[in-house]
Length: 520
Ligand SMILES: *[C@@H]1O[C@H](CO)[C@@H](O)[C@H](O)[C@H]1NC(C)=O
Ligand SMILES: *[C@@H]1O[C@H](CO)[C@@H](O)[C@H](O)[C@H]1NC(C)=O
Ligand SMILES: *[C@@H]1O[C@H](CO)[C@@H](O)[C@H](O)[C@H]1NC(C)=O
Ligand SMILES: *[C@@H]1O[C@H](CO)[C@@H](O)[C@H](O)[C@H]1NC(C)=O
Ligand SMILES: *[C@@H]1O[C@H](CO)[C@@H](O)[C@H](O)[C@H]1NC(C)=O
Ligand SMILES: *[C@@H]1O[C@H](CO)[C@@H](O)[C@H](O)[C@H]1NC(C)=O
Ligand SMILES: *[C@@H]1O[C@H](CO)[C@@H](O)[C@H](O)[C@H]1NC(C)=O
Ligand SMILES: *[C@@H]1O[C@H](CO)[C@@H](O)[C@H](O)[C@H]1NC(C)=O
Image 1 (cartoon, rainbow, N blue to C red):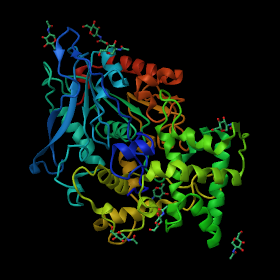
Image 2 (image 1 turned 90 degrees about the horizontal axis):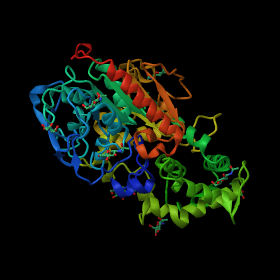
Image 3 (image 1 turned 120 degrees about the vertical axis):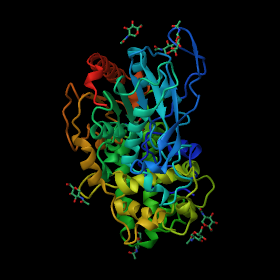
Image 4 (image 1 turned 180 degrees about the vertical axis):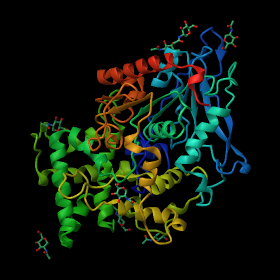
């Protein structure tokens, strides 16, 4: 079964990608950074010594609970290389965030901005797995009791404890703590936000930071997720999607059962009981936008717009074909191919329904159910659930979806913490602790993409303007989510320019570093 929801995940890909790669069913986009596989060639240091391969796993003894160190430690996985390192160089730290870190070892290498900075500055690179993901579990399961040590503060404290205590597996690796070497934190999406939040709450720990598509502001009703998509998708497709969604919303709120069933059947969703589940399922076509990258060319999102807008080789004008043609084309796409991509041969209610609170899906507390760990953070501290826009604002997503849709599901996942029913995540508390959008910290480089659906939760939001400064630059490319982290996206010259600007900032800032500048 696939549950539609709580999709604050990072930048991984399309519905199909998540379906293949991750938990059964969850296909909503995560706030994750794209995977990067490192080259298989042997790793050599600057002086020609052969080094351990990029996929060598190291273990760090991390505190289970930073509020109670007497509870002991757990094994937190990390990866490391010193192929470009020279004594005195920076230590470049990265976590992929809310996913197993397998497949992210490319972030040690110059296939990413991390490696480019290391190469330029003689640095060494680290990838640390986030607590409660992959194999880095402080507890044996994901019960509410175990999850009490999963929150943003514990994640930040992990980063600090790691930086101050790790003995890196390289010559002199026990003498590179932040008081003697400049540390740089890099992250994208949630881990980009974590970069900003760590630098704000632990001043002096990192000398510099690079935060890509960093969703620094936690927002309860994040309808703006769909704004960059609405604005930058083909305009005929945008017009038709808005028209179809308006028609569906009007029909679904009309009470006319005949017309309602007609629409459900058009999408093959006659079996789905709740109308918000039916209309909400159409979001998946828009979530496919998040998989787009300059380097990868057209994706499933483009297929969707082509199905709606190109008929017999003729493309609709800017204002689209109109609701009748677009509705039927969208329905055919679902019944011909898209439903199967999304749900395989599952029954539609099992796949897309979200109302059966006794389904064991919600209460699978087994280790490895990483999506549950992420949902815990979303329900408690982050929000950023992706719904329809408020009345009076154009919407490409049904207005039947409001935060209450996801907040209801939080009570199925974690009934123990909702004795009085659904309540919003504590986004205001998170933002006041981290400064959210209003972050002001020296030597933090923000990189964003105009077409990133998460942009409105970053410092490049259209809803909260921030100025770029020399100590806290904000560089914006035409790219998508976390595009500037990957060097192959420099096929887009605006992404290339952002990467060059980031490299130049690091060069300037590292030249200013002295051990005495750092507060250890
Ligand atoms: C070469 O580099 C390795 C790793 O940094 C170091 O252990 C070794 O001493 C170096 N050898 C020379 C000759 O500099
Ligand atoms: C990236 O690093 C590899 C060694 O791992 C090197 O051969 C290659 O030239 C570097 N690429 C760039 C663009 O500097
Ligand atoms: C990197 O190391 C090389 C060789 O020791 C040195 O010439 C160069 O100046 C170093 N670069 C930086 C940015 O420290
Ligand atoms: C429902 O809509 C259909 C088609 O527009 C119409 O023929 C029918 O009269 C409507 N039924 C009600 C109860 O309004
Ligand atoms: C119409 O949609 C097609 C398919 O997505 C796209 O290629 C084309 O550029 C669009 N044309 C206009 C005028 O929006
Ligand atoms: C709807 O439910 C019926 C009965 O369970 C089943 O035979 C049919 O395949 C279902 N249709 C879809 C589209 O899931
Ligand atoms: C809800 O899920 C339970 C457990 O899988 C199942 O037995 C029950 O039939 C489902 N109820 C509905 C209404 O689908
Ligand atoms: C959070 O802050 C916003 C803006 O200051 C305010 O409108 C909202 O009521 C607050 N929410 C809660 C739950 O306190």
